[in-house]
Length: 81
Ligand SMILES: [Zn+2]
Image (cartoon, rainbow, N blue to C red; front, top):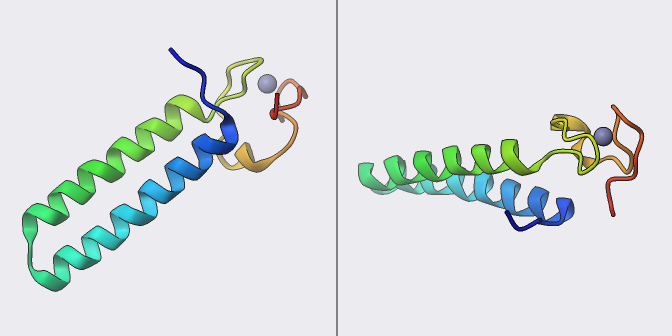
């Protein structure tokens, strides 16, 4: 699997989630239920994407909220390799 820079993982993940919320709102507004369903799928994909890639490159542990830090809270290695 190709490595993605963690900075980019966060940006892509959060943009996808925000986009999903906007699509749900748009779907509710326009009463387009297929759009809401598509947005939910898109958000689920974004969450899976974050869960898979938002990990420490050294010890492999899930970083969660600590993802914005410079050092891994588990092994102390730098995350911005
Ligand atoms: Zn680590």
